[in-house]
Amino acid sequence: MAAALRRLSRCGVAGFLPQVFSANRHGPRMLPHLVCQKISTSSKIKVDLDQSTGVAVMWMQSPPVNSLTMELLTEFTTTLENLEMDKSCRGVIITSSLPRIFSAGLDILEMYQTSPEHCGEFWKAVQELWLKLYGSNLATIAAINGSSPAGGCLVSIACDYRIMADDPRYSIGLNETLLGIVAPYWFKDTMANTVGHRTTELALGLGLLYSAPEALKIGLVDKLVPEDQVVNTATLTMAKWLAIDEHARQVTKSMMRKPTVDKLLSNREADVHNFVSFITKDSVQKSLGMYLKMLKNRKA
Image (cartoon, rainbow, N blue to C red):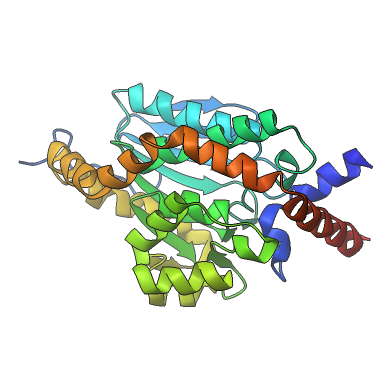
């Protein structure tokens, strides 16, 4: 039974979807297609780094839906840290190797019927991914090739720019309330910094998921392109970001984002405590259990 539930939980929060759901020192040398000179692969993340352009593509590859397990969170963060330290890397495109899904969000079974200690460690991993990505000195673009609810949305809006597949079947948003979960303040702040306070208030309160055209309209994503052109368009767009003086771009990014980052850095322990206290409540565990049961019934 536990094994069956774990397979089902890989649908993450997306299970609520009807569908699966001066000039820069190097200059703008981006090519339309990445010619990979260095390839690094782990079990959950594949990295293609073109050292001639300084652009890496991080492919999430954790079937069936790139649920953010402890393992994927850790590998994602470690991979990003390694790219930060690689002097040949100047920009990162984050995408999925799986069709129709970017990431289904946090893995439910990391939070369901597990110990408070495990929940705490899991939440620290979520914090760490966001801190590294949202505050990264690298230029970051989310190439969203499918649905991206909840934690998948958080990864997307933590990037500098978002390009999404132009398909109304795909959706994106912070829909945690549909599971009886409350998105923490730094999820909220990240979205508010992207689309504004009132839109965020409605989105979080109602657990809204926006179709790709709707997401473009409210500014949750920056551009829509055909699905088979998402990564290529991200590559071309990255050239514009890397054409900006690197120091000026990094300082500007820090100026915009540092207050939000510092807010979590100064409250990490309290945030973990609040999450563990909330997620281990009987009522919340019951809600998660009902959700997993729904997934099992749907699969049957």
